[in-house]
Every structure is written in structure tokens, then in C-alpha cells.
Length: 338
Image 1 (cartoon, rainbow, N blue to C red):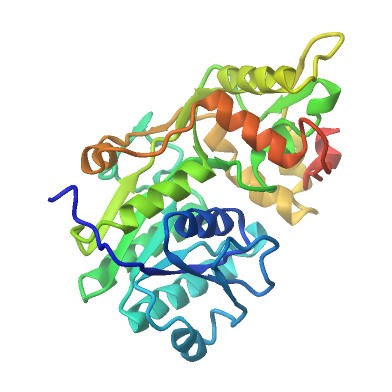
Image 2 (image 1 turned 45 degrees about the vertical axis):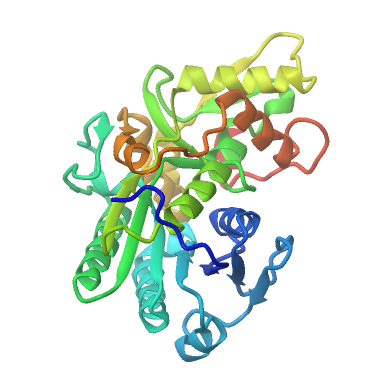
């Protein structure tokens, strides 16, 4: 494998779901690297990078999408249906993205997660770790990857880059919706035991890693790679948030207070609030220590982006308006956490 194998000319990437957190980060990263970016989303993204073009065509309209995206040699699948609609939408949408990449004869890139490994997952997750999902969402993710791998045997080129929980790149993560929601009041909430490691992915770093991988032309038809990101215990994450907040001028007079997510209440309320039910199903991720082994990725790519945790947390909080000035965010489980 030649680590310097790249295509020198300007290339085109189609980002499906460009309005989402990862889609927006990917659009920005590819544009910054000189790629032509086609940003597909139902609504025009609020801040398209310079030179990017919005495509409003629904993913279900494959004929029109294929015509509009003709010439794209890479498709980044950043579509993520609402948590409460995964059962109905996740696989059909993924299959549509897969079919579109086949029509374009493009390589399909998709961000993976740790749902595939289930509650009995080992503390260090490698590309060949058995996928033994124990939740509905995990089983869906396993099926998605199996279909990708099966289609690759028939000619599709596909890459799964697995990462931990996203932070940075917009609202909608555990960081702003739960953990640091009451940051200005000096209160942080952590969803699990604070002495266990948990995998995190700073989205700008993950998006730049996608670019680095996309620029390689010598990879196998199907590849799984793990993005290590930041592995932090709850205590380490909370302290990083506190340092960033203090650097941004937030210093609680009575010191920092830490709270916990009331999982029993969420599980009970899940009978009436679908989102609480879906969140509770994944609660084990905060009880089971896990990290992603990225040695294969780092062996294949000599230089990868990696923002130090303090800088990453500080940038994420500032972008959310949680330090400095900016809008407050709303939490879908706010009633249970207040």
C-alpha cells in the first residue's frame, strides 16, 4: 500500500444529509481541502462553505440525484433519521445512499458507531471485534455494514470509519443537550459512572480524517477503520469542560456541581415519551468502558488531524454559545433532568 497514492486533480464529493452535524462538518472539511462539494439536504444549509452547491433533491429520487451529482467520485453518507424513527427509516435510507453510490460509480463513505458491539463489548474495540449488537439500533447498524460489505463483493467501493460520541460541529450532542446544558449555572451532568472511559469524536477532526481517507486511491473495495478520537473517563471530560468554562470567564461562586442522569425515571417515562425510551435503550454505553483502537488507521495514514482535548472542548462550547455569548440549547429530556 502506497501511503502517498492520491489523485492530484480536483475531485467532487456528494455529502448526503449536509444539514446534520456530521454532514456540515464534512462539507466544510472537503471544501477546505480543495474538493468540489455537492451538499444534499432538504433545506439549504445555513452556512455552505465557499464553492459548495446545495442540492435539494430528496434521496428517494435516485434518478434526479444521480443526474445532478454526475461526476462525484465520493459519496459521504451523513444521513441520520430521528432517533425515534430508526426502525422505519434507517435501513431504507442507507440502501438509497448505497444505490446512489452504485449509480455514480462512486466510493461510499459512512461514519460508523459502537452500537454494533453490544453490551458485552470489550474495553478496546478493533476492526475485527465481533459485532454482537444487543439493541435494535445496534442490529440495524450491523445490517447496514453487512449490506455494504456484500455489495462491495459485487463491485461497490465502501468505507466505514467508526467513531465514538460526536461533539463539536453544532447542537444535538450529549455535550450540549445534557452534560453542559447548565454550564453557566455551574452544574454539569454526566450520564454514567465518572471513572469509566468513554469514546468521543471531535467532529472537525473526524471530518478531516474522512478527507484524508477519501484522497487515497489504493484502499480495498471494502474497508473498516476506527477513529480513536478522545477516550476520556467522565471525570476527565468534566474537568476539561470546567477548564474551558473557567478560561471563558465562568467561575461558579460555590464551585462546580455534578449531577447524574436519572435513568430509572427515563425508562419509566419511556412508556409515554418515545424519545426517552430510545435514549434509555442505549444507556449501557455509559456503564460499559470502551475505546476505539485506531492503530490500523494511524499505520495507514502517517499524519492525521488531532485537536488536543482542551482546545476541542473550548471550541465546541464557544460555538454552542455555552461560553461567551450565544443562544441556549434545549434538552429533549429536560423535564427529567431539571
